[in-house]
Length: 304
Image 1 (cartoon, rainbow, N blue to C red):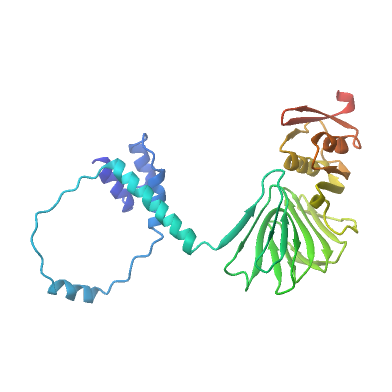
Image 2 (cartoon, one colour; image 1 turned 60 degrees about the vertical axis):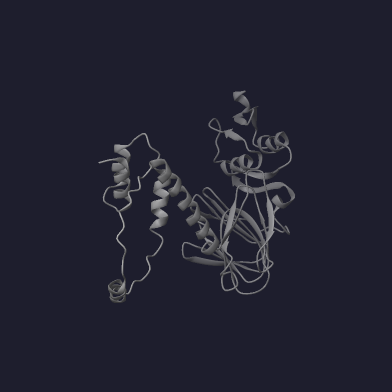
């Protein structure tokens, strides 16, 4: 049995991709896997069997010598690759209605939604929504942090892996990082749902979850989150979360194995100067640091 025959058998489901990889370990079958996947997404046309039989009976055929076309494996891979590109392009043109925005480390982005609501996306965050269904369903998916200025209209929902937020028209900030979730209301009112429990936030109120536990947060009187002005502010927040935010804003890796990262920090750091930012965090906590390229080590003063 040759390679081309095995490939055709795989397309027909007679052998598995695992088996064919074992037989031909030197070949790259990733293109074929994609071609096989997308070919299964295309529905076969509905056939009227009786009509097809009648048409067949009325046809006349000329006898011709059968043509034997050799199957070249490299040509087959090229055809499969073209098929993948065509099917993928068709899918995104006709079926994919998802609009996404993504920010990298130390990057923010401001954009408007279809209803002219404004979103400012903080560093290392992602927001997506269905643009085709937006008028009927103002719903978004968020990971990371974003500030929203929502125009009045039908309910506006932000879904995160930890909880969801619903508003009609207001200004609020949502922060969803590893083991940390916080919603702050700056204008209007915000409904937050977490583990089937719902509460309403009014201006100056926060809802905070740390390590899957709801934590009481103090009221605030700011008009907008500080990160919009290139500064991160914390109020009795565990040091590990402050460290995570430093890494996101400065593209650094912080080694904090020699200190207690569970202690809380109240204060702020700038997004425009790495050394000043590190000093703003370490000095109040009586810590020091060493910088080596993109690596930073934190330690207690007595360990110096």
